[in-house]
Length: 496
Ligand SMILES: [Zn+2]
Image (cartoon, rainbow, N blue to C red; front, side, top):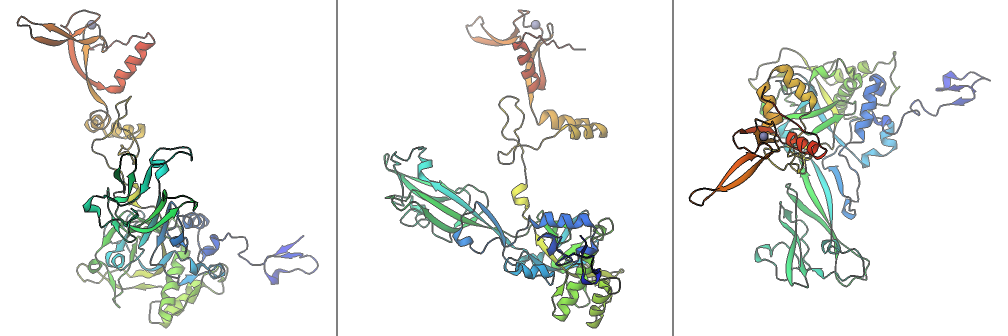
């Protein structure tokens, strides 16, 4: 069996099979990458990974759906540079990004290491604006804590006897009006406890304001009263500092600053970039495909064309950069895609020519709003008295052994003590200096001459209060000593 790729490779009487296309070996996602044959292969693989994390157009029937969480972008565009597979799979019906004017420039320090500066005015005009559709199911059977279907629920949705301050919030059925804004702890719906004749409210828990997008009544049609509803919230997610973006070449970036438009560099034509991309992102990653896309996007925008970026269409005899370079020259631009830029801060011309063009950028669903974690003081673990972990519980971020080693290496001992002791499980305990025990001292009471109760600490084993001192130790140490005592192991502390 002999397989060839293109027709001119056929050897008569030997070749038995031919590939349908040069791109047949690529997956659906890989076939969306523009000029992948110009990229280093790991970048194409990263691109495929990131394509699964986009905040695109997941569905056109969101109005009728009740997904737990659905991300979508609300100002998508059709890419100016795309492959034939993009059209074949009709991706324009499910667009996921925008054609951004990208300048490859190191401007201020805010674009170091995969950070990128976004034009604030672009953001305000709707650049990469997104929303989340989140659905919450409220089941009165669950609220009442019932397991079996036969039991009477005793709760019904109703706005009867509601607090007058909530009167604008509910319809007669106790369910919210569509389009209403809800903030943290606002009541979403009201229901009546028939046994106690009390009106109760289900509250909106998230700290992020939302709008009531849809209310669906769930049931089998035989229930007398509504007992189960699905409420869909619409949450706005404009791009903010810390949100993640990527282009189709595996080049991801975190927005580090929403730069005021008037302080952004601008071209002779007055074009102000949407994104500033740091040039250090190119040498080690070698995403030449992105450079070609920049040229193609720019020439496509000028000539009113959509360029085909299917792999293996250019060759050594038909060079991509030359093709697009000539198109750029044809509309008065530099062959190499570079332009003179002017500082937005002082208006002076930048000395270096800047590579600028249009690249299709995609918003990824990782947003700081869902990830940031802060804690001053808060909940602690019942056993260890150390801060709990977990963002939801207002817990801390683990300061592990590698972090400890780092502080040790830096000699920052006070910071080390602050993290691992003062802000963790510092406890004051009583210790007997004579027997070296922290579990033998106990609080004793005596009556003095005037019959007043006097409390003092004394050692149970030495039977004397003379050697008792107060020491600060981590609570887990006391816990360890107690646990060891439970298996008959004595722990003795000495001063030296
Ligand atoms: Zn003692």
